[in-house]
Each structure stands twice: as C-alpha cells, then as structure tokens.
Amino acid sequence: MSFDRSHHPAELYGHAQAHPLPEDRAVAGTDDADGHDPRIRHRPTSRRSVTLVVSLLVTAVVAAVLLVLPTPYAVRTPGPTEDTLGVQEQGAGQSATEMPLIEISGAETYPASGELRLTTVSVYGGPGGDVLMGDVLWGWSSVERSVQPVELIFPEPVTPEEQQEQGQAQMISSQESATVAALTELGYEVPTTMTVVAAAEGTGAEGVVEPDDVIVSMDGEPLESYPELLAVLDDVTPGDDVVLGVERAGEPVDLTVTTGEGDGRALLGVLIDPVYDFPVDVTIQIEDIGGPSAGTMFALGIVDLMTPEDELAGAVVAGTGTMDVDGRVGPIGGIGQKMYGAQRDGAEWFLAPADNCPEVVGQEPEGLEVVSVSTLAEARAAMEAIGAGEGQDLPRCS
Image (cartoon, rainbow, N blue to C red; front, side, top):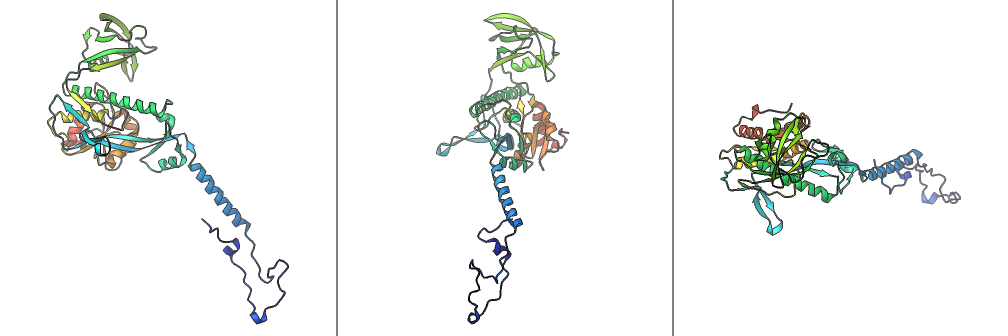
C-alpha cells in the first residue's frame, strides 16, 4: 500500500461541502478570528491513518537495512560447464585463441561425436566477500541454489589469494591424477618416483620413515608406480605391520611400519610427493576453474580421445567427482548445483560419485538421468552403455 504524499490527509477523506452563497447574497463578516469560514467543517486527520503510514515507512526502512546487512552465509549456484572433448578460449580480445581442452601427443587420438562436460559451482561469499541478506533470500528462492554457513564451505579462514592458490593447486593435482588413472585404465605403465615428504604425527610411520626416503617396495614386492603401491595396500588389513623398502641417501633400508586406517583402507601414514614418468604427453588447458572435482571427467576425456570407438555416439554426458591415481571416484561438494548446471547446458546424462548419492536422491533435475559410479572403469562402462543406447540399465542412486 502507498500514499501520494502530495495529498493532505483531508483531501484523502474529502470535505463536507457547504452550499455556496450567490455573490450578490454573500454575507460579510462571517469568518472566524482565524480567517476560516465556520460554515465549512474540516474533517480531522485520523490518528489510525497516521499510525498506518508511519508503520509502513518504518517497516520499509527496516527491510531496506536488513537486505544490505552482511550475513555469515555463502550461496552456491550452478557454475559453467566445459566439454573436455572440446576447445576452450585462451587469452582475451584479439589475441584470444581456441585450444583443445585436452591435448595429447605421443599416441594416436580419435575424434569424438559427443560431449563430456565437467561441471562447476559458483560460490558467493566466503574469503574476501560477504553475502548480504538480499543474496540469502535470493539463494533460498530456488531449488537450483543452496545457502550454507560459510564455515561449512570454507572450514579454514583463508584470504582470497590463498583460496585461489589452493584451488589451482588442487586443479593441477587432479589433472595429474586423472592422467595417471586414464593411462593405467588404457593399459599403460606410469613409472613413479615416490619420495616421502613427511610422516604424519601419531601414525606408525612417525619416527620410522624420514623425509626424502624413496619408497621402492612393500613386503618384498617391488613397486614401480603409485597405483601399484595403493593396490598392495588394499590387501593389507588396517593395523597390520608392513615392511617398507626405501632408499635412504642412496642406500636400501627396510622399515617396519604399523598401518593406520582411513575409510576402511590401510594407510601408511606418510605424505608422498610422486614424480611421474608419463609414456604419453597429456596437456589439460583450462582457465578460471579450480578445485579437484573435475578429475573424473578429465580421465574420461583422455580415455575417449585415445580409443578408436565412438563411445558417446553423439550423447551429451556431464559429471563430477575426484579421481585417485588408482581410478577411485571420490565425493565432491555442490552436487545439486552441478546437476542443474549440466541440465542447463544440454546434458542428458550425469555421472555422480556413489558417495554423493544421499544428496542426489530426490534432487535430480527433470529430464536428467543420473548414474552412480565408484571407479573410472564404471564411469567408462557407463559412457559406452549410454552411447550404445543401453543406459537404462545403469546403476542409479537410491
């Protein structure tokens, strides 16, 4: 409700009009001492109407102030998607050029007729930027967006510069892991020098394994690659001892290490800096995107480009998930926003990490078929089934 402030309250309610006297019969001396004609009665302004106007004005001012107040929340929205089989524009202006997102040399590659789209999330709020109450209300207004406390998305206080550096480091690591996983899936060996950076505090490796130790074997079995190390650990029961063969200052040393446990798997308790000797040169070129969650789609893109079959047969498949060097698909954040971004950009199918299924069930956008995957091998099989028109039997989240 609004009022035209140019009107006096009396005009809003009207006057009790007196009948005018003809000019020749006007009565002189009828005004009162204040100059008002006592025959015309002015209706007094209603106290209730004044109260209503003031209340509305106060409410409007309070609402306006609340909308611009900073909040302890962050808003996630669907971000851009990129086709890992396509090209991305590098640079800006007249110097901009289109480059393949994945470029491979040292092995034969093949054309693809479909799309494999990695998905992203745009986040408003967090390091260096407050979200206003108006933004929070906007975030709550659509199922495509989510509003969460900042500390759930950014657990550690960091500067915008630190956040960007972390995102880029995660992106580089994800590309490397995806390349190792993809080449291993295709039957290549990827020799690896596994140098220890540090032993984690409170683990069986603390005080036993030293920085710069190079891991060469476990329980007498030679290890040539990082995936081989993880495969051997998979056969170890958490808490059991293993004999770790290392090179220390050029000399072979055997170390007995009590393993720990994480996600049901045996862990050595050491941080390793792997250096890979890639048999094929794979370059992934992507700008303005950080984080580890594109690993699965990078790995699928490499596999598709290096196999002669047209796996997709024109299908548009999107997805997400981290990728370990041994081909395990890991969970990510913002799965809901990524599904809506995929739908927006024309995807018909979406590959979701199995560990994200609780967040997927009941949230699938209309027209988007969501498939659950746990490994690169499963994701590859799903891609091939979709291209063959047999996607209806693929596993779903439930």
